[in-house]
Image (cartoon, rainbow, N blue to C red; front, side, top):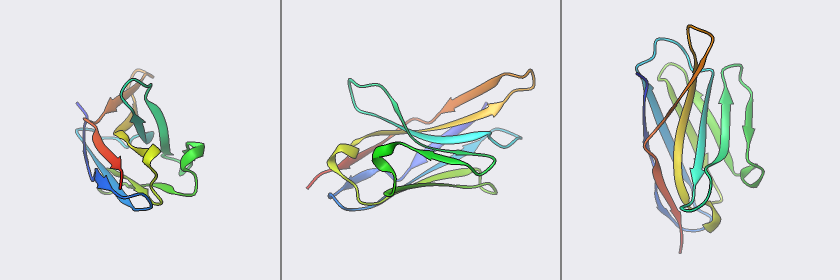
Length: 120
């Protein structure tokens, strides 16, 4: 069973930076994709950034140019560097990892979430 452990959330002033980390364990293969989602209470969870095993990345329009996703394959870890934070970035951020199954299926796993609060 894959486990994802997140760290790095907290309180930051507008314009500040935070780096989220998510370490994956329990899999013998590399994830096809690792991503960060966020959710504000009462709203749907939204995809913030995703990194595929082929090197491709994609971002939510509102974070382009401010956030950067990266992976360290040796450590099975994905990072989200968040710069120029805005109050509207306040949310619980969740790590997500997807793995190809042996039967052709695709299995996704979630971290427990970490709170990011942007406020003065």
